[in-house]
Length: 424
Image (cartoon, rainbow, N blue to C red; front, side):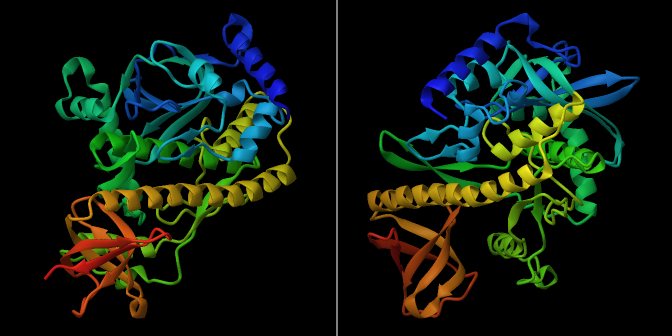
């Protein structure tokens, strides 16, 4: 599709979004609900929002997801480009958006104080975390509070009487998480270090698993769980997210020890690879019989495809064929791997620059694994910065997996390999 065609489509969609007759009669007006978004302060693609409604003395949790599929036509120019990109790619110095920025900012993103179309899931949970009732609707919402994670954590922690909703939502979702735990889900709560680049200078930003991050994560899992059961029940062809248990490492042989970093690393090794499939199958680490991605349609094509199908089903329109969905899944799996590699190479490059800028620093590390003992190639975890990286470790000492020691950076080569030696 040519650039001119896409530009015309963008103008048309912005015009349609500003006209009152765009909504059809099936859209449920939920704009009266007090609605929150929780994201990083700099986030542009705001996909999700949450609300709480009192229904006959029960708490009904609403999870709202942005609805670009209500505007974009399948196989249009915008869609074809998004399908080719598969996802937004976040690099340290640039972001390559899957959908046009003009539409993200003006039509799709769940901006505060703006009425936006969404695909909303209403769910009432029992006290034990099981599902009592669900409702899936195309909706109109209005975000009242755009919070960053720090602000949301404060509301959850202090739970002021006039803003009790987030604390209640956190409690509701905690019951659901406990329900999954009883089924054998894996939860790894650990901080992680992320490379951020400002004015071409890389630094490490540490992300902690705070209550608000856990809340959003569990809400998104719940949404994907319920939608997958809905599409499975109604035989709607969609890309399911599958993860089968790895047969390389037995989970039964891993013992919890004081070295939580090593324990988490070994636990991750028991997880199989995740991929998209036309067939609903288990997601092992989530302990769900089926699961799909549907909470990020602005930045992931798999989610957008699910929304296309749900909108068609809810409006009694012809579904995208199973053969077409199967072909798209093949494309998503292939291009998705390339996007991940592109992100990792970017992080690897800037991490090398960070080490070069901090050559004289000493680092506390934990040896997670020997990759090639004879070539001194290993996986080191940097304790104070919460990240691990493949490294070349020079040492005359006998170092064992799980050992904690100090190193200094001695070199960084053209292959982005970092060299370290132990400080005795």
